[in-house]
Length: 178
Image (cartoon, rainbow, N blue to C red; front, side, top):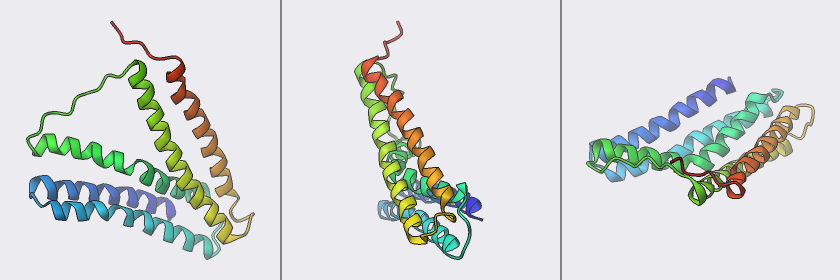
């Protein structure tokens, strides 16, 4: 059930974003568009509440429960960036603004971009890990929440690998192709 709820929440997130963009650019209603953007965290809150209730009612945590925390962390850590990207695309399609440039980054600019991406990942990890930890603490049954701890460990490894890759561009900058 939680797996399907994650899918529904992802769809709900994009429905709020696209509705906000349509309200803003097609119907020229900035207030409604802003309201719909502000509603996107409601999707995360619903997912969090249902996940905790499911575990509190005795379900043994699975990787899917851990993915719910990852989803919320990523939604918060990258949500603003995703909405800004969608806003730029919509402003081009419906707002009469110039097409967003395709940035071909290299050197210091690419290194800065990769580090910034890692900082977003780190923020997502902090939020998701805090949720995982809070659920583990709240349920207070290590055998029931073992999968959540394993999710935390795996995500920490992925974050470490992402750190090495992202910061490698600072030490070994990518050269412009001539």
